[in-house]
Structure formats: structure tokens, C-alpha cells
Amino acid sequence: MVFPIIERMIELLEAGPEAGADALGPTALLASIKASRSIENTEAARQLDLAARWADLHPPESIHTAATFAVAGCEHEEPIAGPGTPLVAEFCVAELGTVLGISSVSAKKLIGHALELRHRLPRLWAQVHAGRVSAWRARAVAEVTIHSAPALTVEAAAFVDAQVAAVAGKIGPAQLDRLVAETIKRYDLADADPAADPEDGYLHVDPRHVTIHDQDVHFAGTIRLEAEIDLADGLDLHQALAHNAAAQKALGSTEALDVRRAKALGDLARTQTALDLHDSDGGRVAGEERAGVSRPDLPAAREVVLHAHFDARFSDDSAVFGPTGRLEEGQRLVLLEQLMTWCADSRTEITIKPVVDLNQPKSAPGYDIPDRIRDHVIFRDRTCVFPFCSRPARGCDVDHVIEYDHDAEAEGRPQPGPTHTDNLAALCRFHHRLKTHSAWRYAMTAPGIFEWTTPHGHRYRRDRTGTTALDPPEPGPPRIPSPRR
Image (cartoon, rainbow, N blue to C red):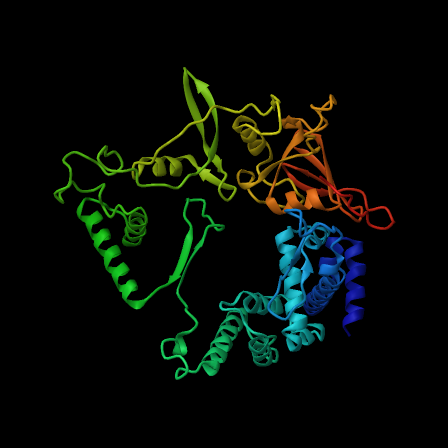
């Protein structure tokens, strides 16, 4: 029996890790792990059901503001799953995310998966709640059916559901991915009528794409990309990369073929195609190395802007930089050696800005935020300061924590929300709108430290180390947002 094993496992764990490890034999330990996974799957299925119920409590009719369609930025209804699923009031995802300790984007995905499974993949939904398919497998299927291009109709989703539900819990993840993709393709091919549209035929789903995985950056400063292109384009690209890689080798490069091909692809992206290696007549410029060539007649090739921050100390009137720094793009670690390589290649322009002292507050008259104050807020906050949000601050709005009163000066009153670094915070556009047009509230308790209160009374502290849940909410009805100017 499973439950006696679970009870025994709890007793052993309460007795201490050493006692538990000594008392559980191999058979009991495997049974306990299996039981634990069963509980995990059951709770994950329950979370999906509760997420769908949370969406049910927040239909478009629940949006309070009467001026939703007249005031820019107010909450609106949003489809977060495939066609045929109910619309949801968009701001509801934020509070669910904070309670679960995830971002608003992840909470939106959770609700979307729950609605997709419940309404468009009911067989798979039933398998999840019967314990035959784990929730994460079902969510993987829902992710595909939600974002399939072109969008899957209700009938197409039902076809996928019928083909996949019975076997989703019996095959591995990679096989499940292939099965879903093949099922969608089979439906497309069965539904297509070449005679009705000869130009479209069986190719009405265009598989071509180029995907750059810029969120998965290696410490060596590389990223992964994948593409599906026309056969002729692919052969042309192969020939161009092979030619460029051979040219690099002929000019003295000792790097591996794969490395030279990768560099050749970068040259194509910058439309350089070995211009740095040859003179206008096609030969190599005498005495010039690729990294050090100076050709004022060639335009700057690289247009990518990177913001890198390094610590430095001064020794004998010279700056000595640390070996590692932080790259704003992707919030990644960057090596000084790699950065030097980037800066030395392809006539890259380098701009060094003055050091911003974060211990020195800054202010400005009026509502507009000058660049020097904006940079201060960006460097201090690094990301959007909403709980669990990780949007880079450079792409965020800079918000007045206490609202700026545009009528204060004319009416002779002190300004309650000055343009001061101690009253400014980085908020991504979604969470800026959430703060402005809903019952969410926050305050800056110290420079760079913020305390948020949700509509239902949950409280969170957000600082540079992350998000911390504070005291539990007090009982009582949720607050209704008051009209804001």
C-alpha cells in the first residue's frame, strides 16, 4: 500500500535525515520516491484546476473601471489560450504569479495552459486529473496548440486531443513533441484541398523560420540559433560559409572549421563577408591583422549595442578592470577577455560613460526625467521592481512611485511626487499599467527597496537580491481601485 509507506517516510524524516536514510531500504526508498512523485503530479493537476478557476473569477465583466475604453492603459480583456477559450481580465495574472513566486508572464502561461486543456483538449485534461498523464506533459502539448502558426481551430485542437491523449503518459517527452507536431501536420494535410487553391496546396503551413535563443547565453559569449529555410537558400548559405571559412584558413587562421563557419555567419550578418581581410583589389592588406586593421573608407559594421558594467580600481594613474562584469542584455555574466574580443572586431565603436554614484541622490524640476537620473534608476534597479519580474530596467518605464501632481505648483502646494531618485522606480509597461490602473500599491522604503501590497492584501519586498514574501494577508474583501487621474 502506498499510504502506509508515505506515513512511514514522514515519521522517518521527522526523526532526522540520518535516521531516514538508515531505516529505508532500497525497496521502501523507491516506493517512497514513487509515492512522492504521485503526490507531486496530483498537486500539479490541482494547481491547473485552481488556475482555471481563478480565470473564471476574472472574466472581462469583472473589470471595474468604467472608463476602460476611454483611458489609455486601463485593464482590458485578453485571450491567453487558443480560439474558443474564454477571455480573461489581464491584470488577474499578476497576483496569482506573486502567490506562486513566479513572474506575471509565467502565471499567464499557467492560466493559458489550464484554459487550453479544459476547453480545447478535454480528453487530455481528463487524463491529467485521472493521474494517467503528468501535468507538465499536458502543458507541453497545450503550449504547442496555443502557439501553433497558423492558429489551430477548435476542430484542429480536438483532432490533436483525440490522437494524443491516450498515449501522452506512455511515451517520452521527445516522442510526445514529435507526435504533436506530426498530428498537427496530418490534420493540415487532410484538411487541405490542392484543387481549391493550386498555389497553396499542401504547403499552406510555411515551416520557414529563424529562431535566435538570446535568453540562453553561454559564459563564453555565444548564443544558439536554429533555422528552417528554403533548400536553395540553404545550399547558398552553406556555400557562402564554406567559402568564408576557407578564406580565413588561407589567411592564416588556425581555428577549427566550426569556429570559422560561425565567424563567417557573423560576417554575413554584418554584410562584411571578409572585407576586413582583403583590400579593394581582393588581396590582403600588407602588415594588417584582422583585429587591428584600420580602414576609414569602410563603414562601421556592427550595429548591436551592449551595456557592460565592470568594477575597476586605479593603480599608478591607470584603471585596472576586474576579469568579470555584468551585461545588461540578458542580465548575464560577461568575461573581460570576451568583451575585448568583441570590441577589437569589425570596427566596433566603444563609448565609455561617466561613473554614476548610486549613493548620491539626484533630482530635477518638473515631471520629465533627464538621462542622468534615468541612468541612475536603471543602474540601481537593474530590472523591473515588481515582485518576481526580471525585465531589464533599460527597457522599462521610469515611474514616479508617489504620483506627480501637475497642478501643485500652480496652486501653490508642495509637490507630493517629485522627480527625485528616491521617488522613481523602473517598471515594465505591463506592471506600470497595473500599478496605475488597479488596486496594487507600492512604496520605496529605502533606495532600491520596495514594498508591494496586492489587491487581496499580500505583501512583498523587492530589492536587488530578489523578492521576499512578507506577513500573510489580513482577512477582508479586496480593495476596489479608486479612480486615478
